[in-house]
Length: 151
Image (tube, rainbow, N blue to C red):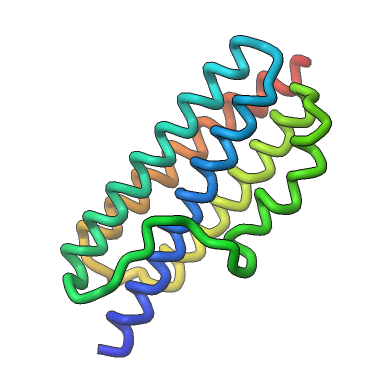
C-alpha cells in the first residue's frame, strides 16, 4: 500500500509537471514573434495538456482513491523549469524562448526516466503511458535541437 501511494504521488508530480509545461508553452507562444515558433509552442502546449489528461486517466486506473491535482504546482523542482525561465521569456526573444523550451524538455526527460528507473514494476498501463510520452518528448527535443543548431 505504501508503494502504491508513493507511485501515485510520483505520477501526480508528472501530471503537475505537464500542467506547468502546458502553461509555460502557452505563455511562451504569446511572446513569440515567429509564426512558426508560435505554432510549435501552441502544439506543444496542446500535447502537454493531453499528456496530463492521459496520465490522470492512468493514475485513476492505478489508484482510484488518489486525489489527483490537475491544476499544476509551484513546488520544488517540478516547477523550477518554468520559474527559472521567466527571465528568458521576458526578453521576448524567439531564440531565448526556444532555448528555455529545450531546457524544460530536458528536465521532463530526466523526470520521466527517473520514474521508470525508480518504479520498473508499476502497472503496464502506467508504464506504457510514461514510455510513450517520454519517447514523444525525446523525439521533439531531438528535432528542435537540430533546428536550433542550424540557427
